Length: 119
Image (cartoon, rainbow, N blue to C red):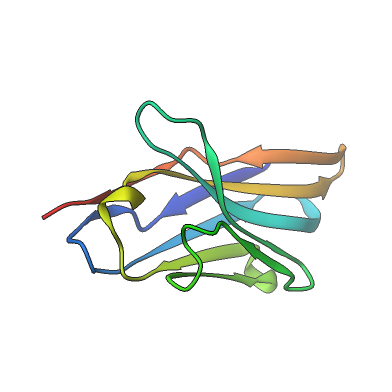
């Protein structure tokens, strides 16, 4: 059974930084895309950033220049370095992975980690 486990959320002041991590565990043959999404109260879940195995990267316009996504393929782990955080970044952040297991290709979500930007 595949699991995505996130860590690194918390409370930070505006202008501060946080680093999120997400590790995929289980019998995984190959991970195609890993990414981060977020959902603020009363809003729909939205894409933050994605990264392929070949390091092709995509960012939401709202985080470009402030957030950096990276990936350690050996550890099946994706990271999100968040700098210059603003109150609008407050949300639950979810890890997502599109991957291949013994049962075929599937999409998985983590449980979410809260990020709160407040003074």
